[in-house]
Amino acid sequence: MKRLKRILLVIGVLYIAITALAYYNQDKLVFMPSKMPMNHEYDFCQPFQEFWLNAEDGGKINGIHIKNNSTKGVVLYFHGNSGNLSHLGHVANMISKKGYDIIMIDYRTFGKSSGTLTEEAIYSDSDMVYTYALETYSEDKIILYGRSFGTGVASALAAKNKPCKLILESPFYSAVSLGQHRFPFLPINWLSKFRFPSNEYIKKSSCPIYIFHGKDDRVIPFSSSKKLFDEIKGNNKKFYTIENAGHNYLQDYKTFKMGLTEALP
Image 1 (spheres, helix red, strand yellow):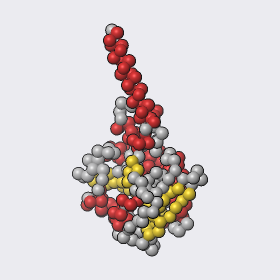
Image 2 (cartoon, helix red, strand yellow):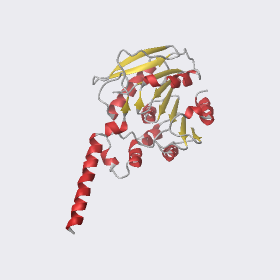
Image 3 (cartoon, one colour):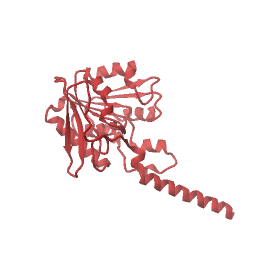
Image 4 (cartoon, helix red, strand yellow):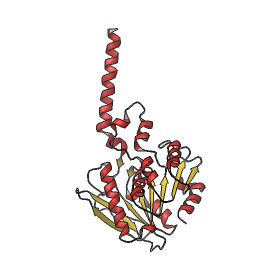
């Protein structure tokens, strides 16, 4: 009996230690930023302007504004939880071919951007980007596009503004539900500092919504995306199942190309 108690005690202590470790290191579990030197010179095929946005708390957000002199409008693109702007040449090419301008930023600690990375800071920074876009484009010419982690940012922006459209590539239902899926043995709902409740934001969006998801996604479950789609009110929505696709390279599949042409005619 004493041996059993010792075993249970050891298991309990280990569980508490793992839980504490996960809580204090969740930034590293959620984000995998790639830094760049401040003197890095971007190289895109299209004409572009590098810009900076200064947050009230001292954060500095680095962005790229690709200017194709479009009359169609602009796509505000929010990337995933890794990499940086220098890795998005394929995105610039893909959207430029559709005839749109593009605005992309790096989150804090990514690329050249700096500042403390919190959920509220990300929301605040995305608000600044939206305001920046409104200086050049009317709101009915602004399209929000989020990929993977960026879908949470784009969904939040769409909930409190009136963009023309919202495009979500490989979205999650909420960051908490995704964390629970990955770490079912941890009390994620209690631990998580990053919640990004896309399921709540999506209900408040009034614009047309387009969702793309790979059927064989092992990073964000396909079922998460379908569940999110069901939360969207009304019929002004479309879901594209990309058969045999995983989390990345959806742009290589015919269904994605056809769907993107519908979303960005």
